[in-house]
Length: 72
Image: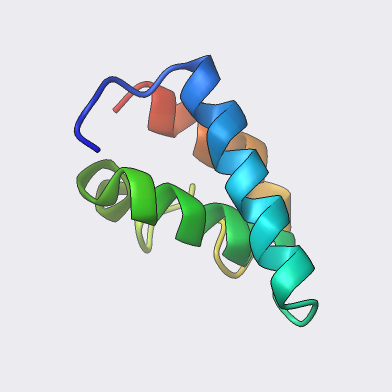
């Protein structure tokens, strides 16, 4: 999927993250959000990997991650 990341795309990312958590209750929300975003937008997500916005290890960064993803 190589399209513009907008608020609707963020909703889809959140839906996919919820599915991931339902399938694997051991995964944290930040991990699920990052993985769902990567599945849909790998290039944009990679730009945020290992930055102050990366939410994979820090759930408190989810909102900043999604906001920054829209602006990529």
